[in-house]
Image 1 (cartoon, rainbow, N blue to C red):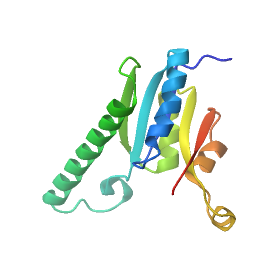
Image 2 (cartoon, rainbow, N blue to C red):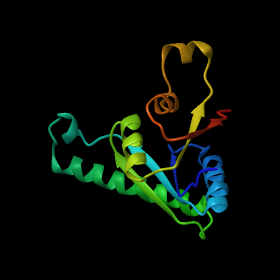
Image 3 (tube, rainbow, N blue to C red):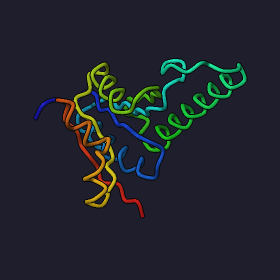
Length: 149
């Protein structure tokens, strides 16, 4: 088997994060890999053509991002063995493109993502993030089904 040195776990803030990190932790222990816990948040309005608005709105958004990053670090600390090298990254941007770009930048050997269970009709009408990732990368992806009960 090929060596795994960098495992990227793409998360959103739902109950499945513990399960995703359990898989990552198990693989990291086996291969001595580093875990990169990555959450993509919405882009800054400045970057998508909107005017920045009043300073208090910008301050509020900055504080919101800091809190999101603290939450991401808390997830890492709660679910991952302290002996495993890991880092939590909060990145702004479009989800699929940003995850793919970050995976390349981090030289990820494996991506772990959750996949929602939807009806046939839903899957027919819209493509999931995990499916878009699968279609657009050559990095191996481990998809974990998320129970939404």
